[in-house]
Image (cartoon, rainbow, N blue to C red; front, side):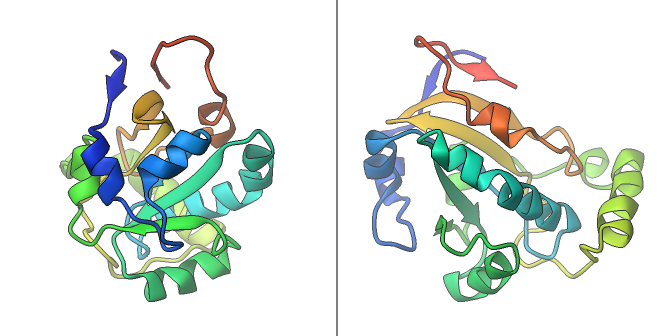
Length: 183
């Protein structure tokens, strides 16, 4: 992946629930920007549990975690509280404008309903008890993760299928130099 920037105008429109914008935050310290799927998705719930387990380690490295979701803040708060993520900054993107600005597309049939997703879905929904629910947001939207410094994407993870399980610790590691990495 080539080194890439996001227009400053987009980052300034991305206001968090705490009243600051993403451009300001990413100018202060690196930001791990996590675009979640909808809260009804078992893989979204699994991702929130995964982030909850490593959030302290990531923030101790000086990286701010910001969650982007497709719900209003009140509804998001109820889901985020369950995973002890409610103190993290969050951005509500009900129109998916910011998902699109970061190149996150709608999933195709295989990305959403492929065989591997069914196998992993059983594990996430039944064995790990994340359950199955109706979509809370756009059920076709794909997730992704970006490490930002200012308006520069220094690392990214674009899900190939909704069941992908990224390594958040690895994504939060700040690379040296001015080279973008794709995990």
